[in-house]
Image (cartoon, rainbow, N blue to C red; front, side, top):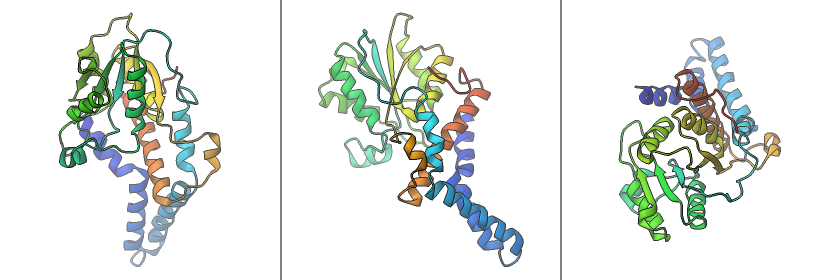
Length: 264
């Protein structure tokens, strides 16, 4: 129920949807009720300008990205038990119909995990992620596993958890699968903006992990003053940031996270 509700609610309240609904209502009402029609039009245009053109989305995402550091961390020197790669970098429907392993803009999660796996030959490589679509679908643990094998990672090092649909299930199912001990050191690889919520969930289920943020979407604080090249890019960045902030609050209120804004 939580999974379905989160998907439906966010679709309705994400900034790009709010802008669309406001502009649509404004156009429909401007003749019959000019006062309210203009208000909706102004509201929709304000969202587009503030977050589609001006850097509102970057201002929202920067605190998330920099919570666990300003850069991709250096390679760890201590013994690492394994690398936990959170899904979300893959396009499942394209992969299943076209073959190969189709990736989206979060592909750095995969490329950095592969680099870590080749640098840490004694570490397990764990992929956790099923289908996060509201309309169902299959997980692509098989193609991800094959990608690592083709890249030279021994099959006996690879572990796949292919049933989780969200971050909370990532942590819960992965812990049950790996049964970590207090002596283990597991790297958690995910996008920098997603790391606070991910760490909070793993801590909540009693799985102590070492954050390894990748896939930064900004170049630094200067992006807080830099307009976007396109309205679509600005609204997409804003939707991503707002989703994480809402997710942090929802997970904390529902008892799925160890803190409202988890940090180091």
